[in-house]
Every structure is written in structure tokens, then in C-alpha cells.
Picture 1 (cartoon, rainbow, N blue to C red):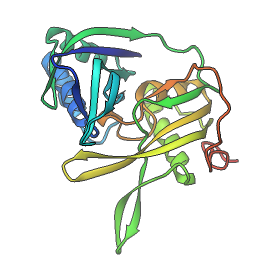
Picture 2 (picture 1 turned 135 degrees about the vertical axis):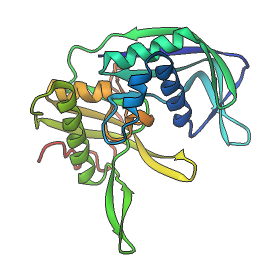
Picture 3 (picture 1 turned 60 degrees about the vertical axis):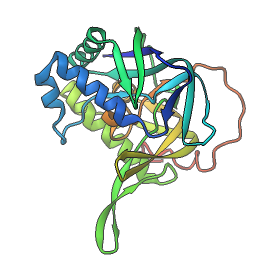
Picture 4 (picture 1 turned 120 degrees about the horizontal axis):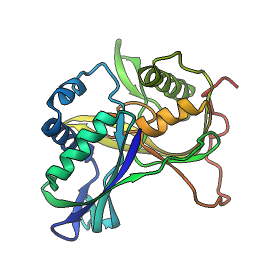
Length: 263
């Protein structure tokens, strides 16, 4: 159970970072895994099973909005985070990166400069979390007489119920035992973002600041494998916010929508 910081040196500076870029990182991850462990790569393409890994958005040490507002411009090193509860996945992806450190993403070229394993917090319950990639939660709603995919908001109680059930499903895959019920999530701040995950297919997901309480195994499942859905296409990675608390205006709806367990 590990997470990594992957730092890359750009060939050119500034370098462009498209707003919707998770599918490029997904392609990089699968290509490097396939290079080292083709059987694992084949298993990971099973669409019905959570992949038990997640990753952050791609970032630059410094960044700014491009003049045409079509993308971000990064300066300094580029970097992103990768996390999994499956050692085999970590070994294949990191091994593949080190075997072939030359990386091309959205026509920008980088060289892998550092891969650093990160220490895990000892306890997670009660901590404040910040998303490194936004949390996606979807359900089905009837529209025009047909069930259609609907992106849930943290202002809707079902958002929290589905986050919990998703964690419990992953817990069973990881630990092989009955999952606990004890989970509570209190959103402190929320900001929606719309991403194009495939050509013409969009996802509304949420950058959140939240506190989570409950069973440590369930919380660690989210911390390492991602909260919410679609983790393997770049959603749901979080970090523990270790910064000193500052009093901020409360997010409207935050106190009323902590539906991890029934109020």
C-alpha cells in the first residue's frame, strides 16, 4: 500500500497543461504497466472491477493561465501523485517509468527525474482532506423517459451514501472481509469542475475540502485507492491537509450534508 510523488523535468518551459488531461496520464500508466507486466495490464482492463489505484491532476511548480485561456502554462518541474493498495500495480508502473523515463504527454516531452515513496499518516479519522483530483459520484436518473447518467453534487445526500458504498466495495476487494459501516464525511468547501474524459463525454466532479471520520480501514481505502468513482481515470485522490487551521466562511450546505452515516 503505497503512494508516490513523480517529478518530471520538461524539455521546454513553459509547458502546456490542458484542463482535461487525465486520459493522457491514464494512457501513460497503462503503457508502463503493460511493458513490465502484460498479464496485469490485461486484468486491469476488466471494466466491472475497481482498479484500486488513483492519481492526481498533473501540476507544475508554478503555473498560470495561458493568454488564450485554453490551458494552463507550467514552469519549473512538472509532477503528479500516484497511489495504490496493490503492490503489483505499483511495482509494474514505477518499474516501467524507471525503465523508460522519457515521457510524452499531450505533445509535451518530459524526463522522469524523481520517484519518491511517501509516508502514510498513522491515523486518518478526524483529519482534514483536500482533493488532488476531484471526486466523481454518479447515479441514474430518468430523463425523457430513459435512465441516464447523472453527476451528483455534495449538496445531495445520495452523494455521501454512494461514496460510502463505493468505499465498502473496495474494502471487500482489499481485505476480503465484511466492510464496516462507520463512515462520515463533512464537506467544508466545494468547487465543481467539468472534464472531458473521452471525446464528447463529460464528467462534473468536485474539488473538496472535507473532514472524514470512522473506521480506519475504510478511510485508508479511500486515501490509497481514491474516494468516489472512476479513480483509475484520474478522480478521487486526496491528501491530508497538515496546514494550520484558519477560520474561513463555511461552505453553504457543508454541515447539513455529512451523510456518511445517518444523522
